[in-house]
Image (cartoon, rainbow, N blue to C red; front, side, top):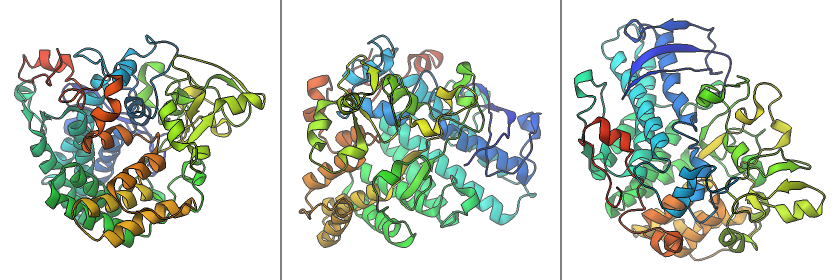
Length: 499
């Protein structure tokens, strides 16, 4: 998914009527104007545009408020605070940071609507390909696989964020829009597993260079391995280890020699990247009212130091200041300098910035607003061309190691995986215990949005986050958006512990 000025709009039925806007670079198309959904999806070109509409939602970070996954989930963990100018700047973030969400306060509206928009677009695409004789078999198989991957991707977000959610695998008629009820997490996981197992055989390994951003077989297996790990079912965890070994051994991925190179915005889709969500400043977007219409990543603007003046970086808004906990945890690790910006050191070198709410003088570096790539057209704050790396090889190495240890598998192989991650940083070998693997995950993947879910799924969240407000049987899930409960007249039920 690289980007260019390609735009089209089709009317689609989700939980509400929505329009879609896409500007994608791996499609060499010209602008197409407007078409009704009923007259669309007739040709491969139109189906391809529908596919891009589904992919497009993965980029969104501003549905129902600013809900960019990487910084938001970092704020929910012990890696950073919420930050901003004050507690009232982004109260939904502050509520997630201290686990004081309720049915109307928190990031749930944006995360819910984003995921169901993506699911609806995938469902619509799948329905339109049924019986379409204008599509070649190879084209149809691949697009079907991609649509199922996208649906699985969004359901994985939903089940981790909300637990019980409506399971929708078809385009709903109007009469069924407001009668949907929630399915148990086990049912959601079963559907995700089914979609991914049906998807990966038809996906390429790897994708062509001109199609970077489309999912590969390796990405589908990596996501499936991660999903199975999250089920906490020992049999499935053993299967996860097998899948992750295939990802780590058979698809040509390789750890980069330089840790810093992973997050260099000029080094997109590196050999270490397995699932990467692209962003671009080509659209020169400037519409604050519909930020998702552009292709830029707003997260770097969020996490940069406020009113910063100095070398390397651009000014940001001061969200997600790094916690003292993470600083202390990483201070003796060589990855610290590539993960965390030391504001005091910058000031000592002559830089200036404004301390904001919850300031610690430490900031996220992996996705910082690097001045060299700041957009020169449109609204720069909306157009950061910095990709989001959702899954990378060091992550799958550590997941395989964990899955092997938890399922009683090959401990020697688990040690090899752990040592490979540490070896890049010239760190010595450690025993492949779960504690060592979990510590390595925090060190290696800090501020990338993994930590909160890692704590929840391994039953460590109460011990780690309890002092800042996390409570068992409540805080692991967000509240269901009150609007969904109201519009369905209580067919959809609120999660326990929320009012």
